Image 1 (spheres, rainbow, N blue to C red):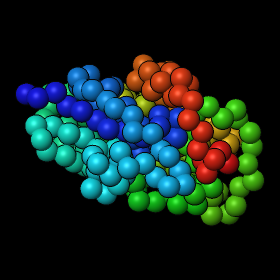
Image 2 (image 1 turned 30 degrees about the vertical axis):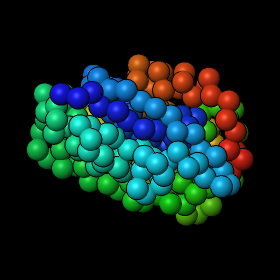
Image 3 (image 1 turned 45 degrees about the vertical axis):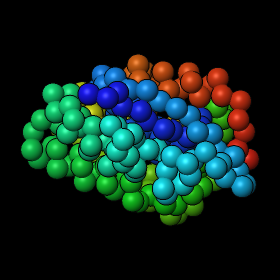
Length: 215
């Protein structure tokens, strides 16, 4: 099998890139990655050269390309079913996929106000009612999952849905958005995962600055 290659954006800022990268790394899948840095405000032509949408992440395998975080995770999960990207129980899998899709399509108030920024020192941000609704919903999801599984991750062991929520963990910490003890416990577990540590270390070495994401 041709080795997988995952094209990602700046690791400090690219929440969508972080998701499949963490999922693959945590599952123990061998892959190469290449950072295609953002170059705002004019964009980076190198992204268009590898992505028909002009966005990352993009996974390349045997000349085939797939984009969008959840689609990439789904493709690799089918390549390596033994890696168990999703929970084993059928109902747990359904919940994990539903919450992953909710994360992919929702929480726009939180997403727009709080760009992912792993290098930014924690500093509280004023929270609007729409942001608070997003925060409350995310905490309910985390609490519901961990009460059933016993933690430390949403379904006990790390799975794709944890990777989907990983950028939110950074947002909650960076913008000081919650003091909920259970949420903080989950965030601590996520930040201690070897895949998270590896991604964050790469992000810390980057020198690019994207003003739009320095909220």
